[in-house]
Image (cartoon, rainbow, N blue to C red):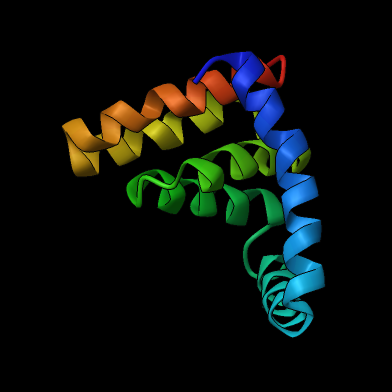
Amino acid sequence: MSAEDIKEFYAKFKTDSGKVQQALPDMVKGFMSLFQATMKAGALTIREKELVALSVGIALRCDPCIYLHVQKCLEAGATREEILEVAAVVTMMQGGPGFTYTTKVYNALEALGK
């Protein structure tokens, strides 16, 4: 996916999420409640939790998870280098399949100007 495709994903995701929220308000409310309760600062900082979430997204090969959590990692103060190291750890743990998704992390950083 190119940087332009990823930028388009971010814009489209907001619109699509709004449609899902209208169609399934209780499900979205429940998920967002879980997300907010889990992702607030606690024993781990928000930055650390976002880096963990990104690693799981890469490991599960979830493109939207990768793009959204790269963005959230940056918003939480993670550096480009930290984000790329997370991708490297996933590659070390998964080998080739993890490596192929590292390009998605790199492209998301490029799309976000980092």
